[in-house]
Length: 373
Image (cartoon, rainbow, N blue to C red; front, side, top):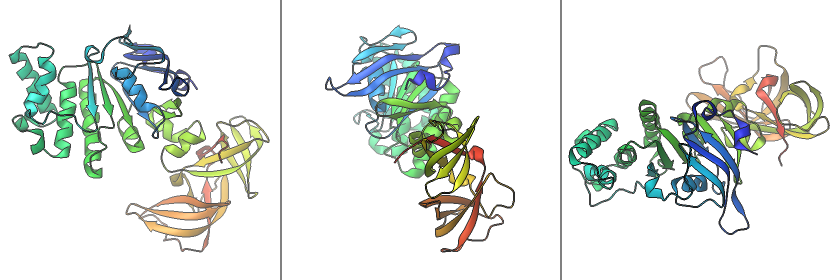
């Protein structure tokens, strides 16, 4: 699947800061880790490459940085081919998971280093270092060594160092993976706000879907070296184009069956237990074909008071109290792990394990996709 065909790129209007044209990568000459990648990234855009381990996302980043050569195709930066340009001459800022700070240097010296190798004068270096430290709220920490900083502070220094020489492009490879959950969430917002204030192009690699949805303008979901979908975070979550994306992004219920009728953008499915449901026809092969129905847990209503396109019954297996909502595990239409999320503080009483309840959802919230399993 070509990435360019998945989603209109802002780069098509504004000109591409980064462009992959028919890029392939093989390490052994036999297996393609990246398969015919076509991707435009606009100036100032924050694009995240998201996917499981081995999906090809980090390889794409390494080719863009110049640390890995492309087997086939061309990569462009600001409309100039860079396949044969060494990494140090690409002018790209990099942020890694392990920070890669020089332990024998102070924070200010770490930031000054990329400016020194660019032969920048001391007064200009000092001004840029101060500005970068202030940007990440570490203006008073310039004389400290990295070992004297917390993990979050070290990561801020790494971000500042990547930005200090005013690059057109910053690459971030799992930069928050070593942080605890609370600090990781805080850094997500900080990086997003820094990006918004500077307008620099960012290519971010992660396997964490929350990071991708929180920070990105667009997300490219990788599997087996191919972009499965390239969309804004809300489109990715609300309108998955195949079953892999639906299962990989957010929590998702899947129900298997056959398509028995197609009416424009909607279809009727008969599930494997005989239940008949209405769904939006997104990625199906027509009447008689097998399909997997995708349904987000928060779109399901317990004991609905209003009419719904689909009404089924389910038996409660487990109820988990998660503060702002109840997470209810049920047996529904042959699926023993069907999840329903009920907001806390609403009209619902806590469901009883082993009891049968009615469930309802709208056809537009149920996506008929390619069959899996």
